[in-house]
Length: 264
Ligand SMILES: [Zn+2]
Image (cartoon, rainbow, N blue to C red; front, side, top):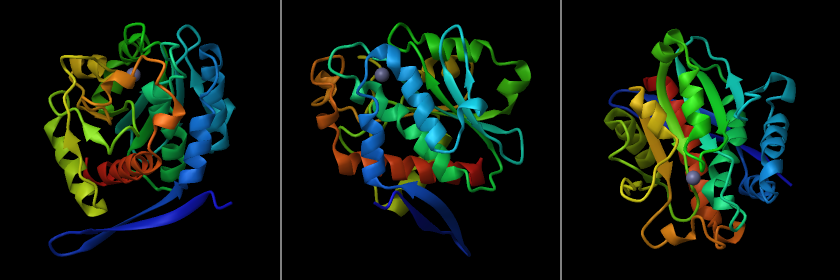
């Protein structure tokens, strides 16, 4: 079985073409990594740690906050300018929590893998957050522990929440306009249309503590009015994930991160 393919994206600019080359996991590998989340809540932390390990971020190199359980993998770039990419691995224990939010969490190792061939300007920090459903606890403590120097270096926080129900969407009222603009530019090159769906009235996500700390954020999800009822219900299962939409979300975010690395 082929697990990874090298994909080259040519960005057409006014007077020159730039190339982004990434090693992308195949859809079959993404599905296998989704399946790995079908475990009880208490086994989720070990599951994401293992998938990171297999994707080239060995367990010894991972940082785990002992007291609250965030699992962190860092891909060092040539500078300290940092882009953080996050998703939460806990769930409410109705259904199997694959949509909310193993779908985002399971992409983190594949994104790490896509970018690791480098070289990258930015340092990328991939964070699988704990206890989002109990009040954004993992992300709040993560932001609280940042030093003033860390904060100054963070250029963006990209949050992945509930992917694969529909084509990727952006929560535009929460997200930074420059980051949305860059996403639109890149999505256009890939031929993916990213609709705006705001969820201010019905939910929150791990962007809040970053947003409150004045760090530019973007929240990428796939929730619509029609699919919202799947979350926190017995329908939150692997079979609700649309393989093609999920793969589009992966391609989009992988190239987006490489694009931000050039542009921020
Ligand atoms: Zn969630």
